[in-house]
Amino acid sequence: SILPEVHPSAGLFARGEGFWEGIPILAVLGDQQASLYGQLGWERGSLKTTYGTGAFSLLHLGAAPLPPPKGLLVSAGWSRGEERSYVLEGSVFVAGAAVQWLVEGLGIASHLGQIEALARQAGESEGLVFVPALTGLGSPYWDPSAEGLLIGITRKTRPAQIARAVLEGIAHQVCDVLEAMAETSPSPILSMRADGGAAQNDLLLQIQADLLGLPVARSRNRESTALGAALLAGQEAGFYATPEERIPFGEVDRTFLPTLAPSERERKRAEWRRGVFRARGWRREETQPS
Picture 1 (cartoon, one colour):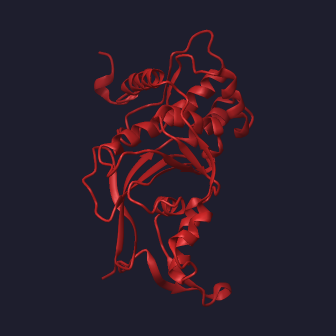
Picture 2 (cartoon, rainbow, N blue to C red):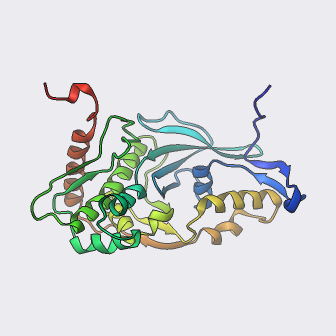
Picture 3 (cartoon, one colour):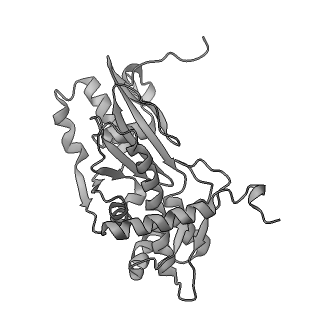
């Protein structure tokens, strides 16, 4: 009896007071669920990733939950009236935070905006692999004993290669999540929507498209979480007679198409898997030499 009542995501929750006197609160969603809604991910099979400090991928499962593959979570998406939706969720702990580490930790650039240009100087990471396990690894590994790893360093390694390897490491983590999602996806994954502050890095999203082998469409609206809550509240308030009236709010800013040959993609993915294998379990006692 001390817990709040469970309600659908859309409905009259309360009315504002003071400056907001009388304004109805008509939608309440989780942040990533709201982001998927704001990315127009209303249909079964819709997929988005939000790139912030971490990276969070959600796949719309439809009206019924499915058993999650190992390393992922199934959670409620949103509900309105009798309508229900469920999502498959994967969380990467370190995404944009790895770029911040380059600036604040290593000092290889004076501000975040310089990292993309620096990484472009490299062209390729030249065998350098960075596993961004700065706080362990999230989905699909859930390994708190993993440590960050930068391997493949030679005397020729320069800051540009390190910056490129960090962006590739972020993208590889998202690939790991999506590969796990593909095992349960109700339909083939054909594309991905992207939003968030770190998604403004064009090179990161191009690398992501290359490693996924899929188009990556960046939302014009960076704040898809706030947009999703507003769209659901607007629908509940009757602002939109049909779902199609909301589509202009979710316009795409740019779509990044894969350019990497499949053989090169698999080579890079194989290098990444070797790096993850070495990074995992680093803090566990049994991994220490005798």
